[in-house]
Length: 114
Image (cartoon, rainbow, N blue to C red):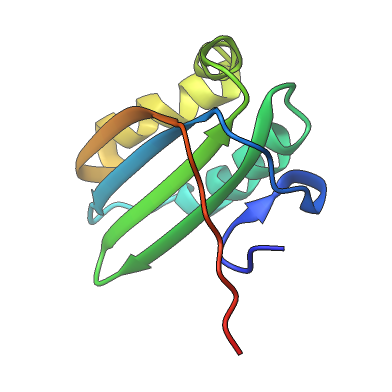
């Protein structure tokens, strides 16, 4: 088990799979942000093709990486109404800026050290 990544059902997938790397700088208006974050994490956990996520943030800068079985699953999540609403609010008020990148994971190595 990789302690840094919250894999769906605790299962580390075998490559290849995909990742969406979302980096951001949070804005001043955070009203409703935490609630939407919790809601989308609950929803995506049951989504077909979703594999897991990892995240970190400090000083308003954040990084959220979601892992996916394939591009079709990612695209289906992109079109989800709640996710679309979260993106819209993010653009309007929650983020000062953000970047989103999609990458294909061809190889992955995990090392848990004593």
